[in-house]
Amino acid sequence: MKKHLTIILPTYNRDSKLYRLLRYFDSVNFNPKIVILDSGSSQEKKAELRILLKSDNIHYYKFENIPPMDKLCQGINYITTPYATFCADDDFISPSALTKCIEFLETNTEYYSVQGKYMAFWVKNKHLARVHPTYYQGKDLDIDSFDLSNRLKKYFSLYTPIFYTLCRAELLKVFSEKIRAAELLSLPVINLSEIFLAFIALIWGKHKVLPNLYCAREGLMPYVPSKALSVAMLLQHSEYSDVASRFYSTLESVIVEKYSIPRSKARLQVLAGIDAYLNSYIPKVKSGIIKRDASREMVKGQLGYPYYNNTEEIREWERMKFFITNSLLSESEP
Image 1 (cartoon, rainbow, N blue to C red):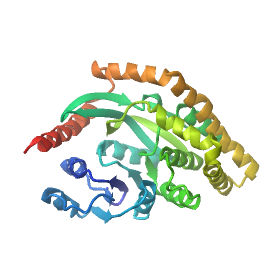
Image 2: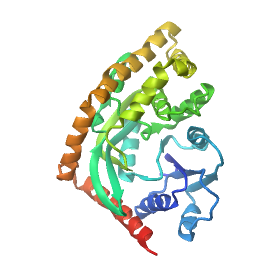
Image 3: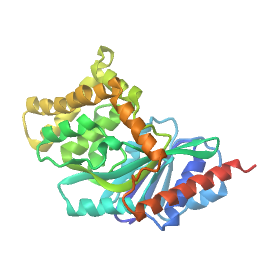
Image 4: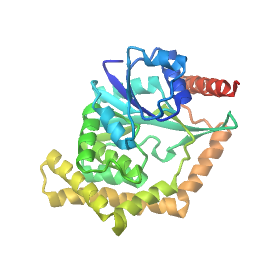
């Protein structure tokens, strides 16, 4: 796996969660290339974590006073494998799902990004308090059109974040180059950077959500209205017109380079995606439709609704839960 996959893992003053994730990977002998980008304090790490950080497949880099997106883009420079993904230090990405994603991309060359289903878990008073499906609107999503406008319209009408998707490495390298050229590394709302990556992914090719448990995310609500509306503000408010101009112009240039079409046509392609986001997805956020549907999914999750497809997924979640629970017990110890 070390020759096939790079995981870029940003962290900031969350050593216990970083240790939890690395132990989880180690428990199933999962050894991709892991690039850890640490911008936290210089406080000495515990011996157990220091031992893991010395593993042959782990590459540890320390940063100071750097914006999160700039740090991620520097991490992209260390990718030496055909495939790569981001993984937050408080998340769990399933090794078996990553393997399935790689297999999918190797046999479906027109696809450039792929992921699976997401779960969210909440910790309260050092106990696992709640678990539910999230990003449910993208379940079984297949952005399979050969037409770029159709891909952008379909994806952004639903908008399921793909920032932690498994990508072909060249896609992330293009993303890093273009977002740096557009001077969008220090945005007040990081979600616009996530949308920028989604555009790059869809410009490059198709996107797929597989029917497998891909990732468990800590403390993630299935809908985040403030983030969606903040992105809309950056794209529409006159105070941020310069940001919006660089955002649009850079994506137009990417399309022109990729498809050799007139810039005026490329602009229409970008606007088609943004229009779907602002006029289809955002109204659902404002009207409460997403909140209502999310609440239904949360209730189903609490009632044990059969979200999983098979025994393998249940086993994977139980393994994740084991490391969550054990890390909480360790934090409780005097």
